[in-house]
Length: 296
Image (cartoon, rainbow, N blue to C red; front, side, top):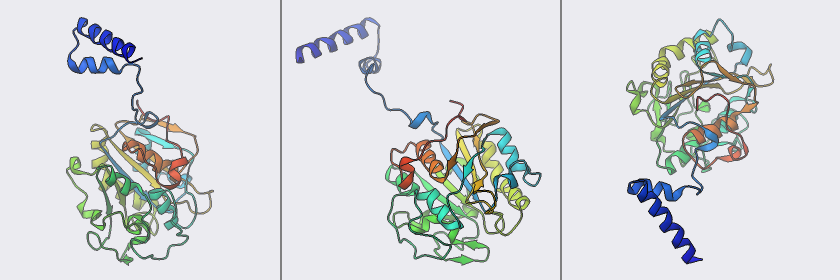
């Protein structure tokens, strides 16, 4: 058996030499027929991903609404998930589920003890894989602050503070969101304050905020292999928890949509796959990747 294997290797090497292949080409030739690693489910590999999470509005309140012209422009130039759903009510468990694939036992909006969980989550997976992560939190009193609330800031919308395996130093203020987008981490979450996230203020207020704060990145992402995801934590409790979710960037087919049903666990799994992670946190392990919207 060894002799036969050696003979096959020599034949491949001889054929590669006859074809004038370099050493690298010979190695590639030798690997033909062997299993090759593939990016998850054919997902693209954006250099940067920014996820913006808004609050408490149903799909029909935003998609197609004249109050949200900027979000609808992202939909027109990107992809629309027409059957995207939150998982539960109220807000805080949904953030936990989107970030870690589990509510981590949280059922309400009460302020918890920081770092109470060491469960895997998107940030800890990125860090373990040597990739970069940060969150940008509007109204946060200072980088890494674990305060429960301050003015229009609410920690219940910032799930990373629940995890001991996510350094608090990766929680930035919104003023730290870079203008040089090449310096963004591989994955980041952006969370507006209680007014700009549409919780206390109107859809129009949040839409204008998104345009003012994120349009520069969105425009840049379109030509720099990067991605913007805009989603909501939950609906207004009147639409079966159906929420808007829009994706925009170079790897997204403009004007595309999918009627496949997705929820926060599916979005988390897709973010993991887009980041080149092979691990999945919590219920993301049995969730599905978002498909049918990518350019390749």
